[in-house]
Each structure stands twice: as C-alpha cells, then as structure tokens.
Image 1 (tube, rainbow over the protein chains, first blue to last red):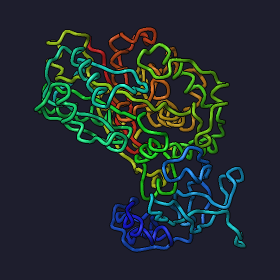
Image 2 (image 1 turned 60 degrees about the horizontal axis):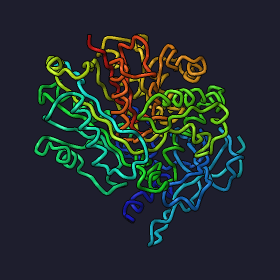
Image 3 (image 1 turned 180 degrees about the horizontal axis):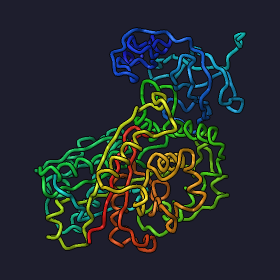
Image 4 (image 1 turned 135 degrees about the vertical axis):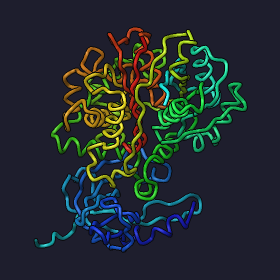
Length: 135
Length: 386
C-alpha cells in the first residue's frame, strides 16, 4: 500500500507533534491548520508530552482487514494532559484491567503490516503510566 | 422555493441477495417507485451509496442505474456521505425540485454488502471514520460507537441491559414488515447474551448488514395532484448539518451537535417542535446512537435517552414511536440505502399503509439519517397531505 501516506505523518505517529494556535493558545492534535476554537490559522508545531488518561475504551473482537492477527485488542480515547482527545490502541495491558481515568503514556509500537510487501506501519499506542509523577 | 411532495415509493427486502446485483437491486426499487408514483420518466436521478467502489468494484452509479432503468440520457449522479448517503441524496433531489431545476426527480439508495467477507465489510464501514487518525489505529466503526457507549454508561450510571428496549422494540416492529431482514422478536435475555463485537457493543446492539435498495419520486407539491396512485406526502423540512468526522475532534463526544443542529433547523423550517412529531425514524446503527439521537433531537434530556426507552415511550403505543418498521437494527442497514428506507417507511405510515405496524393518527413523521458516528446528519420532516 501507499508508503508516502504513512511517511508524511511520521512526526505525528512517532513524536505526537500537533499544533498550537498563536491566536488563542489552543493545543491541537491532530494538526489541522485552522484552529477549531477560534478559526484562526494554526501552523506552529507543538510536541505533546504523550501523557494522559483513558476517557473511554473498548476491546475489539471483530477486526478489519490487516488487524485480524491482533484480535482481541483494546482501543481507547485518551484525554491528553494538554487537552485534546486522541484515538489509539492500548498496549501491554489486558483489556479487563483498563478503567476510565487510568493514567497512560505514549509508546511507539507496530500498528499494522501492509499487504504482501510487508510494509510495517509504526505509531503511537498508550500503556499504563509506569511511574506516577510525584504530584 | 417550491414545496416538494413525495408521490411514489419503492423498496426491496433487506436480505442477503445472492442472486441480485447492485444494479438489479437499485432497478427493482426505482421501477417500483415509478410505478407507485405513476410516472414513466424523470428529469434526474440521485443515487445514495457508500461502498459500491470497494465492495463491488463499481462506481459511477448515476449513469449506470439511470441507463439500467430505461432513463438513459437524464441527469444522474451518485451521492456519498457514508451511512448518510441516502438522505443526502434526497436532500439534493429536494433542492433540485424546490429550486425549480427539475419537476420529476427520482432518489434512490442502494447498497450491496454481502458479496464480501466480514473483514472486508468492516474495512469498508470504517471508511466513514478518519483514516489517518482513527482507522489506522485499528479502530472499527463498531468500536468508535463502543467508545461512546462505554463513556455514556460511565457518565450517566447506566448498564448495558438498560439499552435492551431499543433492540427489543426494533425487532418487535420488524415482525410486521415484509421488507425487514430480521422478522422475529428478541428478548431482553437474548440481548444480554449476544456475541460481543467490541465491548460493550454486542451483536444485538448492532444493526444488521444486508443488501437492499429503496427509492422515492419527488415532484413540486403543485403537481402532486396530477398523479393519483397513492396519497402524496409533503416534505415540510429538509436539513443537513455536519460535525468533526473523528470523535476525538469533538469537544463533547456525548452530545451529537450535528443531530441537534439538523433537527432544530428542520423543526424551524416546518414550524413544529419535537412534541408535534408522531413518529421518528432515527439512525439506530447501534443502541447508543438511538439514545444520543433522542437526546440531541429534543425528545429526552441529556443522559435520559435510555430512560425514555425503558418507560416504553419509543414503542408504537408510546409518546414518540421510533423504528416503527424495524429500524436499522431489524429492518437491516444497507448503509447507503438506509436513508431512503427511512423515508419510504415514514411515507407508509403517513399514507396509513403501514399494515399491522400502523401508528394511529400519524400526521407528522421525522426521519434522521446519520453518516459516521454523527458527522453528517440529515433530517426530514414529512406531512400527510389532506
């Protein structure tokens, strides 16, 4: 499948680089060039910490093509500490141990293998926060 | 702007039509609608469809189907808005007639979903979501709805069983609909035991995937009296609204803002409110969508959609009957055709031709078709003509 399609998102997939709106300060992930909060241009890159909390989660038993080998796997909406929600898989955790509000951190993992060429797509997943920062 | 009426309807059974191709299904529905309307030709054809390219290798449905039904030469085009494709096509057909571009317009919805295996169909359905930021992470369309349902249960303190009345009602109503895919009742116990798809969503939370086609014929209301086959039904309101495609891009995922915008624009256009609606064909792709749609459309307070169902208010005898012919859950959900099935069913109710499923004194009916998990929402309000 299309290599450029994944290559051009490398900063998002590997480093969680979004944008910050210079007009209102909103932090945006994914990057989108126009701030949804104030409709002003938002081009300034902003790297997210990758830390957040589980907002919701679900364990998938019926997967689309390319993901069958991972079943069952757990997907989540993660509320990043900086504000945005992000969709991703949870990793290194049993679906039954997950709960809403659980602190998580971003890690880089294999997302899928594309087609017969075996192009491996890497990107962010989230695991349970290993060390709770002393608050 | 001219008033617009629906003068004819047609539909195929929603089923696994091994013996019928996409063009045959669409043809069956279009020809049935033309016969029901008493028209022999049309000025334009709009075809709602989502997945023909991926699942059957066929795009370009406008010209294909126009030619197939004997209307070679007319204006014809496919309209795509994920699961909202059907009603999006109707919206364009409505605009063409209301705006005076055309007098006789056919709007069809068609989907062929059972030629492929599960994983391919699942791949197709998730194309309604954000490919770069949802699907690549292994999110399925079901799991996106499951994320909403889990959060709903968490925030409002409801259990999975509290969603049972939606599916029980849909299946009960499908029994009396000869075009429905699952014409059998289910129990609360069966609902609780069904196979898990993406927890908390199980098989009986989910609408049925099937093949099907439906069609309607539109004319200016002033011309409707020239056609005598069946009572005409007036389109009192037609509205579309959008939201972010990805759920993570919405500030408040449990509030379907495009449902609210679309429904309330429609109420305003029709000069009515939720209390005036006699039946509501909503987009019950999953039980959670029924609850969220009832809330954002003004039929229940936030977090109270499930309780409206628990109280029996969504049944044919209740205050706001929904899914009166089985809904997406039990009539079946041939995605790009669903929006037109909803319209066909509202017309059946308003004509008094819904058989054993007839709602008493049905005068105003609302249909709401949703693309994705709330990103495109099209609402129509129809009125029985005297």
